Amino acid sequence: MKVLFLTLLLGVVCAAQEEEAEQNLSEASGQWRTVYIGSTDPEKIQENGPFRTYFRKLVFDDEKGTVDFYFYVKRNGKWKNVHVRGTKQEDGTYAVDYEGQNAFKVISMSKTHLVAHDINVDKHGKKTELTGLFVKLNVEDEDLEKFRKLTEDKGIDKKNVVNFIENGNKSMYLISISP
Image (cartoon, rainbow, N blue to C red; front, side):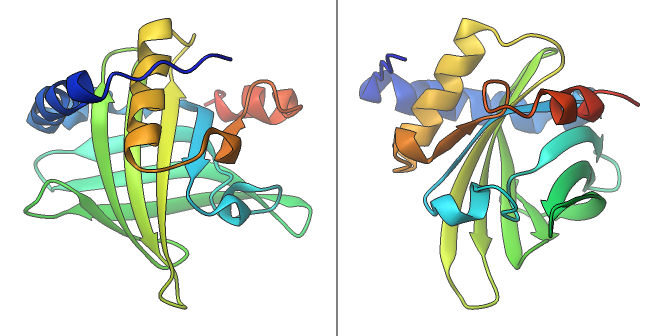
């Protein structure tokens, strides 16, 4: 899979998209499914890793300044249904307590896609940068390109990106979009 990155354009596009994404995140609430997750620490997204998450739903509440994450994660070979809540900070990130402290931010969103960035600091103080592409139905080329640009910008090697559709987890993929 070819990855084309335009560094100069990335800065301008991300800045504009960050402003757009912060305006009304409640519109992004609903069912989402994980398509890609990238990580500076591949162990965090490997099989049974804490960030190999299969999203089901995100609920943003702009009035309360919260986001609720509903997802599946595999622990000790068994699927676990997880719910965590984040609180909006002044810088536009959401502080989330999951596998340490997280600063989650929506970088780009539309009615069909959501590209996000997360900085995780685990209980050992190790910092990991994660990127994700989540969709409602189908992956559009434009959405995939936004994810790729963000992933490269955060220094995540393309070999440290998990493709959830082509990775043999189709049954979990289908479960993640059910209500």
